[in-house]
Image 1: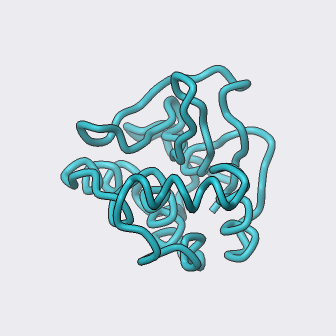
Image 2: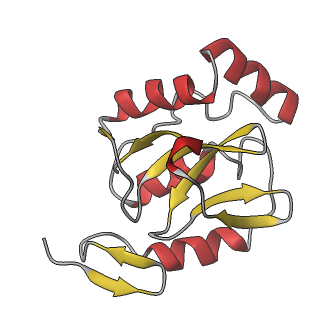
Length: 144
């Protein structure tokens, strides 16, 4: 497979423009159920032409407390993502490539994130943020 070196790292030529998606997402305010650590990667999966891995939970929460309750009921964020990704037909992989979706651990908190090719990008309190993480801090990875 050919790869292109872009500003966000290496990515397959048929992948939607990840840099553009991240810039769009960076203009949004964090809002539970609209733009958060679950919808951000799920919306990327949709942009990649996949089914919505958050379909079961969209519209089911509008606050951080309600989101935390759904995540708790699912057995944790990784379990919630696994159920959604399985339903959407998105395969799990062992090592990340640009554009992959993952559940990462940041300062003891789990977050849904997208791998830029160099950093894991996620929705933070002040907008989109990125972190270079050791592999053991990436719980699970899916390739949309």
